[in-house]
Image (cartoon, rainbow, N blue to C red; front, side, top):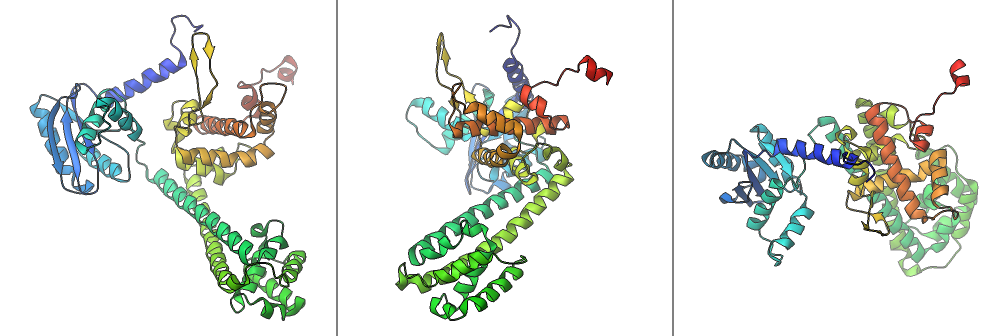
Length: 451
């Protein structure tokens, strides 16, 4: 270290985090460790040395744990403690219920990561035993060691954004699955249809033509051929207008009509497969409509949070892409530093140093996978339209220096997007390409000052 006896930035951030946790887990509080399940809740009350003061299994739902918390407070008071701190693992939805019950009673509430419990379980007695009783004690012990965290506060608007983001993610998964099924079916029974357009599922004319073909007597290609090119084009045109388009691409329509004469494929399954393709196209179209509606609602929430103008200052990052990131991060002001957001995503490099040895750095990959995915999706547009990110990508992959692979360079840009988004939201200042490149504001010269 080159700063002598001064504290590093990491030391200051760590000390601040420990101070916040100590206010939630004071030494005057007993610790209530709860292992949550569906109809069985294991509750233990311990001191800070992990001495068990009380233990009981409650055969109830999570919403019925109020009596258990009241009983834990009585046991803690009998042992000389002034209050209790409730701790559990953030699994499923039950931890939200427990947090609400604790807040109603004025009790401090913290969470322990399941991975921390798993590691402590291995180190406990080297048997890797897993029981509700042991897990509850381990949760309380990790809380006493401040190996816990304060969960994100409940907010109605941010909660709505998160639920809309989860719905959007589910719709995207369904749509990708439907496209893959349609492609697999056509490759089996009618591969010529996929060659009618360069990107079939991005072509409104191709989708309309497939709906016309598959909707006529469950995909009877001979019947569709008897329509003739003109009548087929007229039918597809009506379908395109019905879907919100203006006019079809005649080249794609003619290619589809020509593909009707192609006999390649498993013809015995063609009738049933094309009927299934029609049903999948209907589901895909409906999910596209639902996706647009969901994204519109997400943008409305961003407007309500007064964040739309802020996040769109970053060139190349759309409002929907920023909303998808904020769904996973929540309110960015709760993160003390931009690096904390990058760590939360698992995009921070882990250092490997010992003496004079310096190992190869790799990403931790220990954060939220959905946040990494959302930031990675934002890279595709930003890398092409943002000159700062484009130059950074060229520099990271240049052969003149130690080049990174394209995937590694995109991960670095994704981390940069998270840092810049944190800076824009927390400072309420526009995105500045000079600061994004150099990290500081340009120093005004005498000529610029005189001007």
